[in-house]
Amino acid sequence: MKRLLFTFMLMSLALGFYSCSDQVEETYRVNTPVYMTYGELRSAFNVKSAEVIHQPGKIYFKDDYIFVNEYQKGIHVVNNADPSNPEIVSFIEIPGNVDMAIKGDKLYADSYIDLLTIDISDMNNITEVDRDTSVFPYIIPEYEIGMLGGIDQSKGIVTGYQMTEKTEPLGDQQYNYVTFPRWESGFFNLDAAKYSGVGASGTGTGGSMARFTVYDNYLYAIDNASLHLFDVSNNSNPEFSKKITISWQIETLFPYNEMLFIGSQSGMFIYSLQNPANPQFISEFTHATACDPVVVEGDYAYVTLRGGNLCGAIESSLEVIDISNLEFPELLETYPMKEPYGLGVDNQVLFVCDGDDGLKVYNAEDPYAIDDNMIAHYADIDAFDVIPLGDVLLMIGEDGLYQYDYSNPEDIKRLSYLPVYGDR
Image (cartoon, rainbow, N blue to C red; front, side):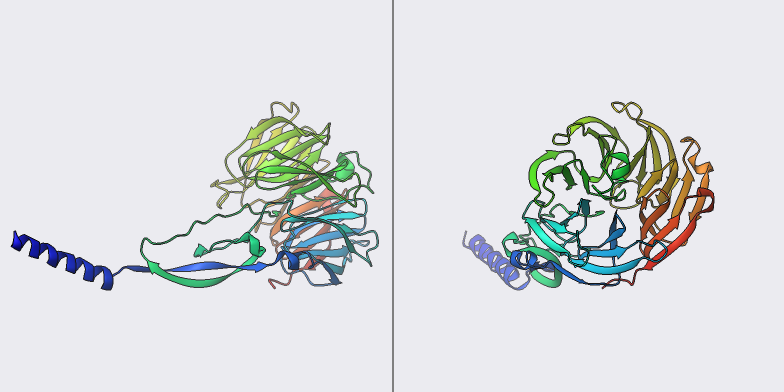
């Protein structure tokens, strides 16, 4: 018995020495949040003199001006009275800005979790006239490697990260990470004046990657899963109306003929806007999981599916969907693409931004033979999104803002180019 007790004591001592001197540890790279306080965020609006474009995002057109998003920084204002000679005239500093839309002389822009209303009636005196606070989901910037440190929303908005290292005993990690929905551009609508019945002085024109759009007296904005409605009948003072749950991973908005087409990574949702204050679900068209903007003209919806990325799909394609019966949308044809992003259509001329494979222009009169009717291919640019304006095409890409005259689709001419000067 004594021998057994002695043996047990020796084993206990051995284990004790091991736990004290041979403890296994791991070192982690941690993205420690850097914050902007809410006070700093809500006093940061500023209008500066013209700046060069560094990281372009979405574009919007109203009257003779182009508004170019500087991703999460603000908006460049471009005088485009002469499309062959556009001029950047000012920069609106808006931290966290990705999307925008315009009604009358008021520009609506996101600023992280806030909605700003900006008076642009005098382009020489642009002012913030209203701010709706905490109306959008709390967001964080993307991070590529390492783990995410704890987020403390009471400290403000996360604007970036400091990479630090943390060493701790194996198995003692107490990380409970939550990645908040990301409000991005990624993140446009076609010519609202042309297709929604709103006069040209009423709203502006965006592209296919929009998460903001104005229809009638409502501003619609989407987050990752919901449609937010703001009553803008008094365009100087938006009033939050309601939030409608749509689906997970919704990405883009496109109004057309009293309908709202919502692109998601799983499909296309169609809502009626006959009562703009209360959009009603009509139908859903499902497709393989992929990033998915949509544009519409006549009886056809055109959808690009971008694969080979976090959106899920392996292959990339352009899909043509028959929407002559809105309750039962039907896939007509699929065309292979390389890396498609935004697209636009005007009078059966289809523009597709195929990433680093450039801008592709098609005659879409025959939906079953689009790939046989390519009009032009600008392969030397990295194309992101387009806005067709009747005769002039606006195209934003990784390297700048391009404009083309397509009044004669068989003889498209480049009018101008504003370059991008790389990351700040």
